[in-house]
Image 1 (cartoon, rainbow, N blue to C red):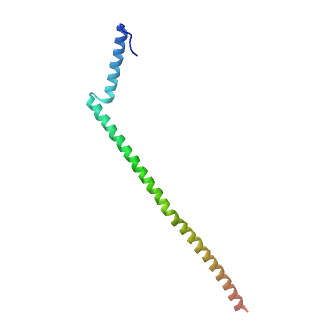
Image 2: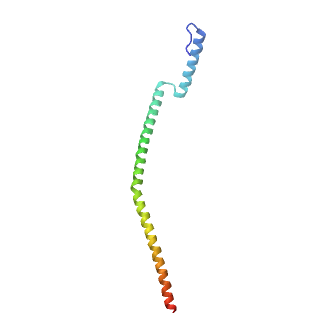
Image 3: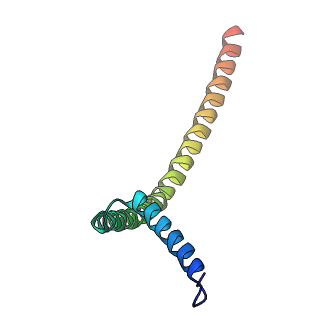
Length: 109
């Protein structure tokens, strides 16, 4: 908060608060501005790495979706063939059972 001109006590108090804030920030960042610049550079590098990773993630998601689209018809064909084979096996099983029953009846006579 800006102090009123001519108020020495307020200026001293505000100056003390600002110095305390600078000390607090220096404790967080380090003793000089070079450390702050290095920290800022590391943050930018980390941000760029995150942006790159998100872009790669988007590409991989797109590849997965295209693979799902490519596999879907194959899965449908697989299911159709499986159902068709099972149906034919059941029909053959029924045919063989009936044949065995007929042959068994003819042999018993």
